[in-house]
Length: 119
Image: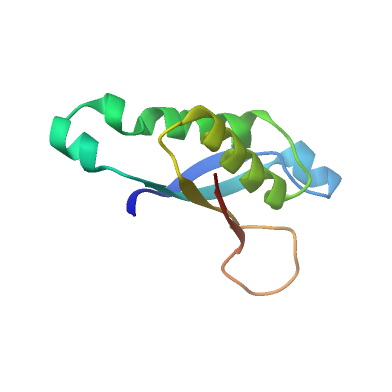
């Protein structure tokens, strides 16, 4: 299966179980792999036969920056569900939402959730 990658899309959102997360917000990094057949797009050189990258970015940005959820699992699920609804050529996708600076004591690079959804 062919793939389109979105790596390291960075947004600022207000998600979390602690009140300060919903008030102060924090950075989120979203990575997506879109699985679909790209052969027709490659043959025709026509945007109608693939997925518009700008629309994927805007979908992710809108969910992360304009909505509020307690869990990053819910953020990832919303991105997956809405992508499958909006992009009819999409067969399957992987969504990873990374929280680089969660309010957890300790030493680590980040925490992340990764889900895979399909039709």
